[in-house]
Structure formats: structure tokens, C-alpha cells
Image 1 (cartoon, rainbow, N blue to C red):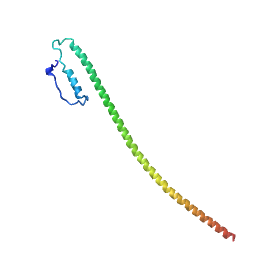
Image 2: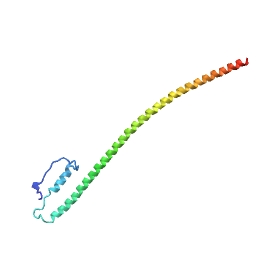
Image 3: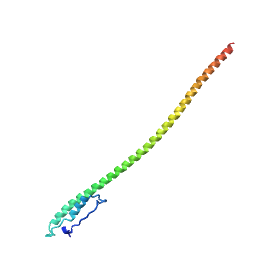
Amino acid sequence: MFLHEAEAVQFACPPLLETMLNQSEVQDLFSLINQPGDPASPGSGSQGSNRAVYTSEERKFRRMQSNRESARRSRYRKKKHLENLTSQLNRLRIENRELKNRLALTMHHHLLLSLHNDHLKSEAVALMTTLSDLYGNLGTMLSQ
């Protein structure tokens, strides 16, 4: 059931998206499949040794797949973390802008109240001066 070199299957395919294999890795896998068996002794121990090599290659391939899947999950987590940080950044920028607006409004109210307070103080000084003058006039009128 082995393929002979004349029957070797040649595939020209782009990298597989499911396994993320590139062209050379696909060719390596096909070269393992297309290795000719020993036609002189199909029942000999060479088939068992090919199986041991294939098992080692299969483990390597599975480990590669596992590593790729782990890297994919890691990239996904990193992407989600970056999206969360970006979202948090945008939220904090909006909050910062709102706080700056509130601060500017509070400072504006403070300025208006300070001006009003200064006006009231000067008015109080003027009224105290008027009151003092009135007391002086009253004292003068009573002493006569």
C-alpha cells in the first residue's frame, strides 16, 4: 500500500489555515508519506522502524500543532488584554475630560463668587463709613 516514487503525490497548496503550516512544513509531511517502502521485503522489520520514525515525526508534528495553538491562544489573550486596556484608556480619557470641565466650571463659579464677595466687602466698608459718619453727626447733634 506504499506509494512508489513514480506515484508520489505532489500538492501545490497555500499554507493551511487550520494548522498554520507553511509550504515547507507541508512538503516535509508529504515527503514522509511518499517515502518508498522496501518492496523486496514488505513484511520485514523495516516497516516497524519506519513506524518508529513516523511516530517520532508524528510527535514532533503534534507538538508543533500544540505550540501553534498555544501561541494562537496567547496572541488572542494579548489581543483581548490590549482591547481592554484601550477601552480603559478611552474611558479614563473621557472621565479626565469631564473632570477638567467640572474643574473649569468650579473655578469659574469661584471667580464669580470672589468678585461678588469683593464687591460686598467694599460695599460693607462704604456702609461702615456712612454709619460712622452718621454716628458722628448724631453725637454732634446731641452735644449741642
